Image (cartoon, rainbow, N blue to C red; front, top):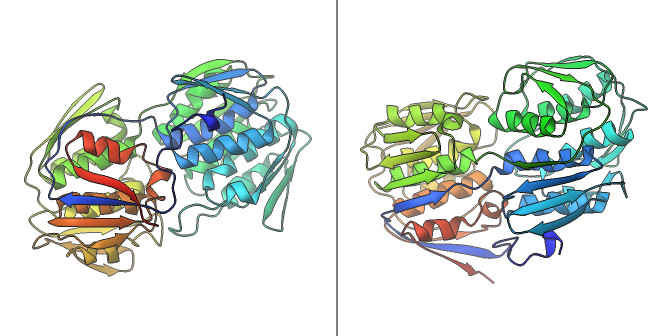
Length: 432
């Protein structure tokens, strides 16, 4: 049975689904955090680098994951699933093209560019889509692949790349881009010599990708630091691997608990991956306890604070919207400065519909204490904005209807089921 045929693999995939949430909620209990989508997407693309069998554990049931698996199948990967393990086997490639019909909904499809070039010396990838949160150019990917000897042609909405063999060199990144760092790591595994990526992104998912590549026999050093070295090898072998816990999911549940004055415990997550977030929440007055594999948040009274998004280890832009929803429940004013994406405040009008007091000035949002969030019909605009609306709905008085939750299903595994387990009044219905 292929993974794509497994019943329930794509939980809640109906595009017209909506969520009905009755608040205010009081949450309690324990939730196991899913494996990280942003770790598994590049890892799945990295499976193309080996002609042997790769076994991955606990791949999350998400729309973006299914899209990547569909893309890999089109490229020739044989995919099977047994229990918590998914096996990927690509002895030969059936195609070198990632077509628009698959790529249009998911930016991470660009991750196949580096592996295809490294393995076969050619690739054709449609320019990627994803959330409409601002421009996210792939210039850093392409310019540095050119430095490695690739010939790049942009035509008809596609990136066409060729290289008889990629060469090892030093690649200084103008910005510590996560995607560019990961793509260049994978493109470098077969080069003759050592490739150095300077000003590399340092996110935990990059460290995880390096660990995965090394488990297949790659020679990657410094992953998780700003200087990564990749010594080329001749081939990559079979492996078994499980990705890290999803730090953005963990941060979302922490903020939901704090917004509702609740106590919950998260397991399966290393608190160090969101240490900066936890310290910022503690600065607001949050009572949070950590251990090697769990995080517990207790009922807290929150003050305001100032947050500026930044590359890791700073405050992640992927938790900015959720943090804003939490700030509306604090007892005094807060400020958020969004430094990564220029259009990542689309959740603000929806929060205002729920009685939030938020003013925007350029890249800054000024959040005043709400006299009390109240239920309203709202609409998801992107993945993380969806999570912010759920947090607000859990804290609000009355019944909130959240439309377009297909955004949410791109990045949160069975979120409604997990909140039900914590005691929330939440149900998914079809809005047709």
